[in-house]
Image 1: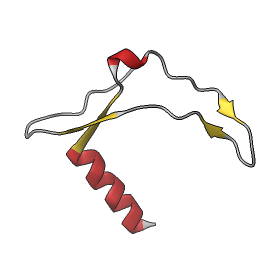
Image 2 (image 1 turned 45 degrees about the horizontal axis):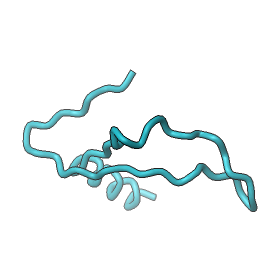
Image 3 (image 1 turned 30 degrees about the horizontal axis):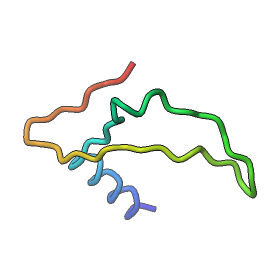
Length: 58
């Protein structure tokens, strides 16, 4: 668990996950099957530059 946490934190520190502007609003409806899961969606991954800060989303 600790290793997975460290990998996730490293990825989030080095990259920014951006919702594409042309993608519209995300659809949070669940897909039912063997398990419940969300529908697939697109994200853009951008490398953070030095001095980038995380912006809070409210």
